[in-house]
Length: 530
RNA sequence: CGGGGCGUGGCUCAGUCCGGAUAGAGUGCUCGGUUCGGGUCCGAGAGGUCGGCGGUUCAAAUCCGCCCGCCCCGACCA
Image (cartoon, rainbow, N blue to C red; front, side, top):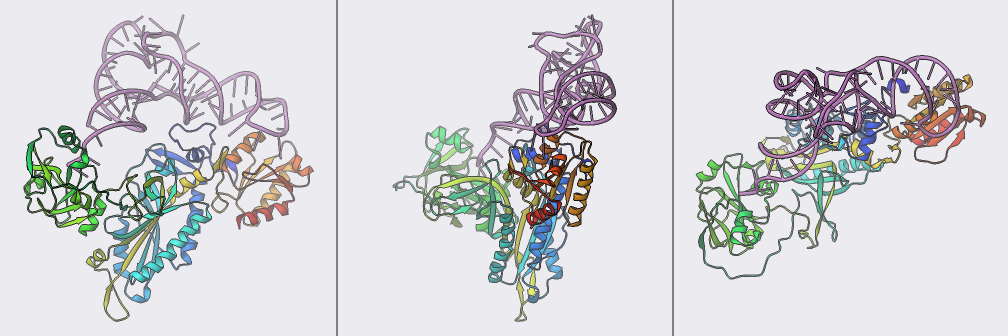
């Protein structure tokens, strides 16, 4: 393809609205263009990269007998997988089954300056793995993850793995490209390697000194509706208070979660222990309906709500809690003596610095971009959706669904961050938009133009995609654009090269170039792409 | 939701505080010449309702009000 028709104006200056170096190169080289807040269009170069990524992934999934379908972006992917499965899954003979789709996906919270890494509009590889049993699922999940991680590996993308959690998910894994500017987080233990996303992370509760339980006592605490206000007013640390969080389950049941005042509720964990698919913050009216007072709530004497207490709050003696009366709190509230709970569970949010649940070491936060996620749905939820198949025994059995999502847009963004240098991009040959950047320095010498068109024909005959730069520009402009766009190989046809016996070849990122015959040049490209 | 900043040729930005005549630079684009291996040089040219509406004024990119758009920060955190 001729540079002229690529319809790209490379930029000398960085765009004002992108911060990350790789994303700036994507814009400057004409791979992508910002079209709105967090919205990026792919130009010809970017689209070619996306197509090549998809082709590679599809080839990987074909090895696993994956069937490509299409899920429009308007539908919820999980519901769509369930619908399709319900309609077409009949027999155990079909299992394990692998379906996938390249679908548009809207990210909920785009961030400024992040280019593709934070774009709102993304394209994801959605993958559904249906298995006959958890054993079968575990094996098949390993194969699918292996293929997809293998692709990331072949693109030179390092990833960190960790546990992932979401409502309705039994087990999950996330794989993150480490990047300081990323929006995703893994909490990792340097001692033992424990690694999890915050929503999935557990931590070891460290208890204070044992104390004798003091007598319950009501105190006036005017205008203390938040933990911070309360702790300041009573001059106690926040860890000496109990925080009450009210959530409403899908069935309308009110859930009263109690965590220590210095902790936060992990909603995903609460969903998990309750076995519900979602929770929403309760309305004040719903809270009052069970006899609690927003801002001054206490589990003491409460009826009509499901009470779940974090294990740390349950083990902490003499906490300050609400009195269920505006302007009053209770001192010395003790779990067991003063109130009971439906269950004591780990429902507090883990943070950097908390103790590792496995070995007690400190958890540290690593930022990055999650590229791949695997999530196995809770069997109970699938059974509730009557997603069943006929087993070999002749009985109906619930199916196990594992979803994988690989965000292609994020992946392209991360590739640009991973594969760029001071002068531009240098994407792996397997996904670069063209195989060769062919520079023609014709000048007034017709022999050069002739040699160039001969080389172009030879390359294309060999199935090599070529970006032909035959613009009337000075050499420096062309070389700089070649570096910026960063195709794996630059071939230069010029008077000088012809005198030296052929064309000049230079690998992107190499300082040295060499002169080859046209045949050798074609062979070099073929080697490079393989 | 609150506070702050920004909006000027395609792009990156001056100019606004302190109002003044055809509104600027670089880059990009077009044309002519020049150069011909790392963003050549010279000249000519096209291209802007200065985000929008209204107000003050002899005169508004500039001051005032409202609106729109973009950005940053803070925001309940129960």
